[in-house]
Structures are given as C-alpha cells and as structure tokens.
Length: 209
Image 1 (tube, rainbow, N blue to C red):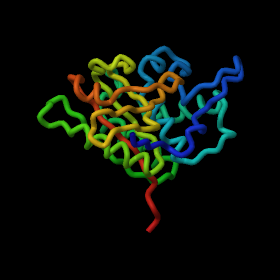
Image 2: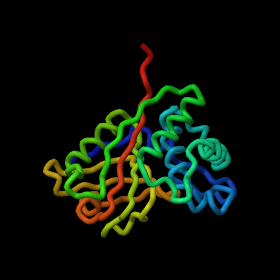
Image 3: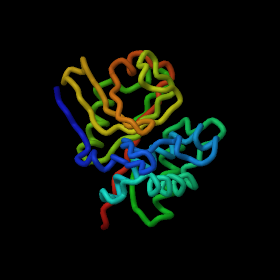
Image 4: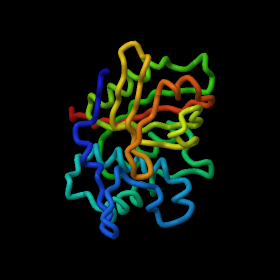
C-alpha cells in the first residue's frame, strides 16, 4: 500500500490548557456563537489549511491562539444560510483572506459533481489528493452526502492529512481532521455511494517572479 502524508502532522496537535486534552486540528465547537458552531466547518478547515501553509511552529499549539485564528478567518470565510456548500465559495473566500493578509496563494480544485456521468474516477481523485500531499499541504474535503461511509457527516468540510491506497484503486483510505480528532475514512466506499458528491481543494504559495 502506498502512503502519502503531510510532513509535519504534529503541528496539528493542540493543547487545551483548561483540561490538558490534546486536539488534532481545530474544532468548530470552539466558536463563540451557536451559529458559528453549527456552520463553522468550512472556516475551521480553512484555518487548518492556512495555519499549515504559513508554516507556523509548535509554539502555536494552544487552543486560545487557534481560536483567535479561527475568528480572524471567519471574517472572510463566512458561511451562508446554507453553510459553505461549494468549493468555489470556499476557495474564493480563502483567497480573499490571504490577499487581505498579504499572502500570495493559488488554489487547486477537484470537483465531484452530483451527476455521476461527470464525476472524476477514484484514481483521478487519488492523484489530486496525492499532488497536494506531495506539495506538503493538507487538502480540504467537502462531503455533501456521505453515502455508506458513516465516519463522515453530510454537508460538511474536513481536512485531509494523509492518503493510503493500492495502485489499482481497490483500497483507498484517508486520514482526516474533524471535531478536533484524527479519523480514518474509506474513500473508495464514499466514491461509490455518495449521491451528491462534493469536492477537494488545496492551496499552495505563489513563487515570486
């Protein structure tokens, strides 16, 4: 089995000093308002991606610092009444945040449309995710329908940090960050059973000319 991963997964280990718990990536439940907690999966995933892209060090490992980042990201990556149900809405808002902070990034996107005849193959998705991880960046994953993959929530964003697959595509698994936890999902099962699809997005820094 081939394994690809970001090189510094420990950067996502976050200490909650109030109870000494260790979280894996941020958690939308940390937001202050009920609406933010309900709709905050997109901004939370954006916070994960932007944090890692900026190469912040392990001193940035306490919940309070993460929450400040999440609130700053929310100002630009702001869900609608339907949340953040498209990859375009996600990457446009993340690009707006980056531009406001003077960070030059570009996005790469792989759509998984509802129309099955227009969907990429599983191996095409694997190659896309692999390309992000080989660039040492996590990938945002929008799941609109989890199908038979019960570890995923529908209409939800999560952060991909590693990929495990057989070359023939018979088995494909992802490690994701969600709810402050590290989880494993079966991408083959999701690809075969999702009815609404979703999409994948990652960002890389632009090189100066």
